[in-house]
Amino acid sequence: MKKLCLGLLIAGAFTSGAAMAQTCTTPGTWTPDAAGTPSVSSDLCAGSDSVALYCDFLDSAGKNDAVWQVTFAAGFTATQITVTGGAAGFNPVIYMYTAACATGSGCVQSGDSGNPIPLAGTAAGSYFLAASAASSDASGACGSVTLGTNGTFPVSLQSFTVG
Image (cartoon, rainbow, N blue to C red; front, side, top):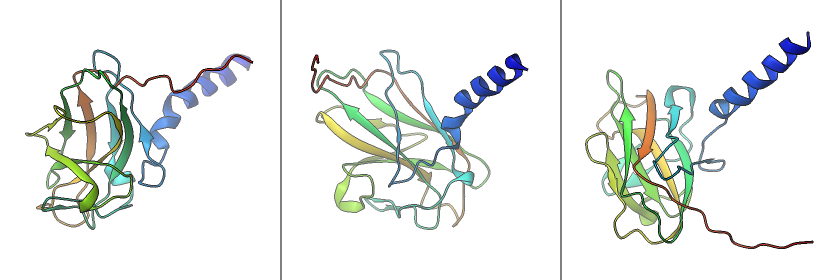
């Protein structure tokens, strides 16, 4: 019985992150290592349309989205963020904002499965990545998305005390 309970506890620890909401009010977090791993994924069909994303002329109104917070520290090594996924009628896009629930005025960059978000010139600080369906997709279009990168966004120590 103890082995069964421990097994269920371990299984829950590895799957609980996937069930968390990744909305603009409760974004997920992403801190890849020097190799860019791990990537982050979300099933947008199981999500909600928490914010009408707008970046340039791209609009995700009526389509589910997932939001992650990232912090780029000085000296980060990542040069791009990619989005992959897709299904019939679903073409994933990604937006980078300065605030979690921002619209056009907070937009920094956008990308899609063929055009990663370039990070050259990105200032250190906190940003939000939102994945959704392309504006050309029908309302309600959804599928699974995976965000990847080729480096790290190291987080710097903000304070340290010994008590």
